[in-house]
Image 1 (tube, rainbow, N blue to C red):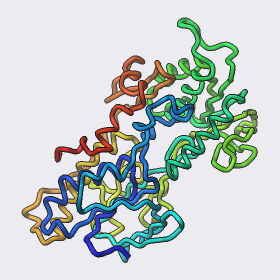
Image 2 (cartoon, helix red, strand yellow):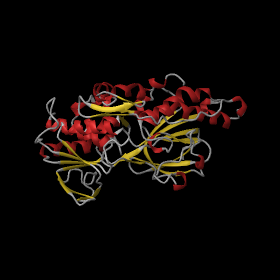
Image 3 (tube, rainbow, N blue to C red):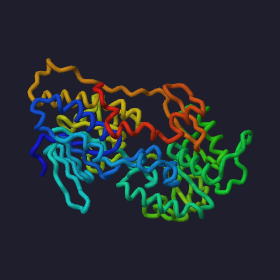
Image 4 (cartoon, one colour):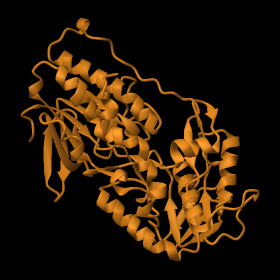
Length: 412
């Protein structure tokens, strides 16, 4: 069991976990008494991180993005810190919040127990489709993309389930790639080469955006050969598991709740994500499986110095901007708690910082390489601005500074 140092363990090597580790190493540990006694331990299932928002376009071909920017080595980002850091490639499979240790299953199925002085849960969420997230490691994601790409040229019909951003973006990317785009004044693409059907149980696609924006998105999808079926949930798929890793490219019959059936050569379930919390006792979780997190980002039921950030926590809806806004708040509270544990008087420390989610309408959704819909801070954005901010490369222009820690160069 690893316990020689005061371990500050961070579970999860994506946006939240990587950002927190950089912030801790730059601004928290150096300000602690006896700082050499602390070790920041980052545990990640994958040794590479990915810009997950880019997967709807990246799954089509490696030519869509520079691969060295799309995938980055996590350990390499922390070579700048010569001491006080350890990277462990493994998956958290147990959390004992009474004895205060995590069990990590390493490659090769060996296990290791890590005692923690403080713990940050940043394990994110897994997507239903293995094409749309780093559910395991980068090797498995690439293998799933390769299998999909092999089957794609022979596909005559595609069905995508889920009317949120992932489903809409995937439909738009595949539609434009396979069918092109209708003319400037056309209401839709007639007789597309590969008809694509997007199914949503909601009364409109993109439920977080106002109806007028959702309607515009539907019009843009029609221009690339995508038909939207609203108000009908997928009841069953045959074969079972179609679209998941066990039957990724199987021909599928999709049966909707109203009895309608859709035949498809490829099926992509883009129906949201499930928090990666199977290793956590249910007493720490909400009814939806997220870690119960308060406005200071602490997990009160887990005992002292346990926190959660990102999609895994209950403090905010899943969104990258919410993750980035919480990093300085979380790390300020970790610093406060570590100083208290080291014997500092509470009266000498600043008060807790609290996170309040910005609930204004905020979501950008590219639809193909040149169009998109969205809103920011409650204001609807024109299509060209959605392209300029996100649609060009799905945020890849922003991730270099985040992965390297330059985004966290200043304490804030």
